Amino acid sequence: MALRPPPFDPELADVLIAAGEAGSFALTPEVLAEQRALLRATAPTLEQLGHDGFFTVEERSVPGPPNAPDISLLICRPVARAGRRPVLYHMHGGGMVVGTNRSGIDAFLAWARELDLVVVSVEYRLAPEHPHPAPVEDVYAGLAWIAEHAEDIGGDPERIVVAGHSAGGGLAAALSLLSRDREGPRPLGQMLFAPMLDDRNDTPSAHQMEGLGVWDRKANELGWTALLGDSRATPGVSPYAAPARAQDLSGLPPVYLDVGSAETFRDEVVTYALRLWQSGAAAELHVWPGGYHTFDGYAPEAALTRAATAARTDWLRRLLD
Image (cartoon, rainbow, N blue to C red; front, side):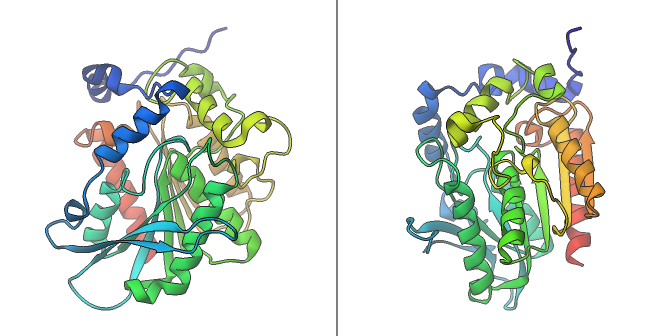
């Protein structure tokens, strides 16, 4: 029997209809360069990221992984007072193949204003030119630098929260696993928003939502294949590439996860949360009814987005208290 897709939230559906072709992430190898150029051309400037002087903003080049290029960290810190603040370490989305350290950063700066945080966003290398392990090694190098130099940027090395949407959420989860296993810096918490976790791309929700919404099974296959090549969906894929492959989820920092009920990643995120609980981890899961992938970015004023934002802010505030 064919799997019927769950309905979109009506308010979100209207936004998607109004967006037309722009409302789908119809990613193909042929348009990859075009998508990258568009994201760079429309990225906010350093002045815009400063929020009329609320933040000091700088791009800093820091050492990358061994035998690899330096990485660029975008550092935004409030200027209101001196002292050490928690650090929100951001990994951007984009299916592992597009995006920059300025992509999707607006929500994180809003939290920084409300909760008095430093935001650091990492520019990691993109697939397919730089397949696994390049992206996760880059974000690990960024975490190691932040932990060592936190005081230089007004941050607290004991209060670093790793966070990201989609591919960035998957990288934040992979980073937490990698840092645990290397006995590296331990994040205070993880915020995983519709994270990209499972290269097998074969859950019921992936099949239900094929051809629908913003990021479907076809686009997901392209992203994972770019990262993993012919090893995608084969035995032995590293959990540092696809965190759903991890056998052991114990000993991880507290996790916030959320996902829409009408999106490709729903089932892999719910399964990951179940496995975290079964491993004794502290995890909070929200499944937003009728939400499609990254609905908050498409419909920032929608009721469902406001509810999701409030839940995320509440969890982060409780973590930092």
